[in-house]
Image (cartoon, rainbow, N blue to C red):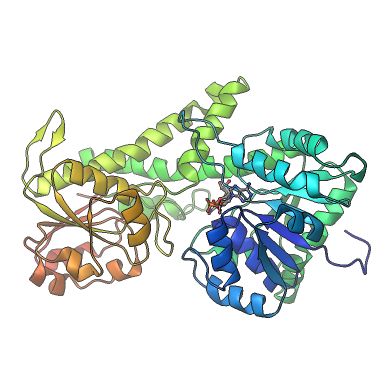
Length: 458
Ligand code: NAD
């Protein structure tokens, strides 16, 4: 820990997307002086004006409060950011490379080489983005090359586990903090940079475990956690596939095995599978990196995890053809002449993030099969329209469902879970529903005259 009485370090967050903006705002809330930096001028202007550029529950209010308190600023200037900060967190995107597998580290490189030359005193650069193992060492070399020689700038890695939709809570009250460091100084700085989190926990009589590791372990913790979660979801979806041919009900199966504390019931719901900006790209990048390091075989199962996940999307298409009594040819089903309501565009509820969303992938498949797709999402319509401009976007659930031959519930928003099947039954063209998330009360829907199909259910 830092010497007692040491001032709190000033923090900067480079990249103010879902991760960086949430951090900048929440750490200001914890009492730190913060700059959020991004190369996207429109995004920075929006944040500086008190408006969060994406949907995350609770974040708007915290942003406005901390701007007003003067603890939080936003900038597009590397120089201002470099001069301000003692600890600089790299929170830029690390998307899937165009070649399909590995991670694109060009944003990390630009952020680090943009910042480093402007540093004018000793500081710590901390990677938070999800990266292939070995990246922190490379960043350390970049920093050595691009920062003024005599400052002794250090690097650390602290992977991030926040979940969109719960991001504020996850940042203020994380279930652990992991730091990969090489020196006592870096360790002390990182402790000081997180002291607000530890102090909050103490006032609430909680503890936040701190795991201090080397660089490689810190980088691996993140991808290992995501690989495990993806595997758990694909495991139960594989059981759903078996239930579908054997006549079992995966929702009962999942409940029954989940009572075993060694298995646990969280992340064990069968449905349309995982998506979003993290799990799919992270498990692919992890495999690619393991291959490069000569451990490809160890992660071969992740390829199956990916395939099981993608097969769930095709399953919805098959169910649609079955319910609508359409022939399935070699090129898939022909759904022309049908009107299908798709409820949900985001990869999960309580976000507007549609990156690699299973729901949107299915909507695209339905449209490609000839269906007239009418989509509604409480928060994701705008982002979905940018990805798939040719679908019809509706401003309410009722408008989407109106006159449809089939309703597909593909994201488990509370509005959809709590929808009244009797009322909806009166406005549809045909009472057919696919519950892609097993989130509806099947008895209620069947009772209201709907032909119901879930995932992995009889
Ligand atoms: P995002 O796309 O929402 O945000 C990335 C931001 O970085 C964008 O605003 C972009 O303009 C900015 N950027 C690009 N180049 C820059 C530069 N040179 N300097 C400063 N900013 C720059 O991405 P995200 O969802 O926030 O994810 C960021 C990283 O965090 C990724 O590695 C991701 O895997 C990881 N992560 C994300 C989550 C999550 O739930 N979103 C959770 C854990 C980890």
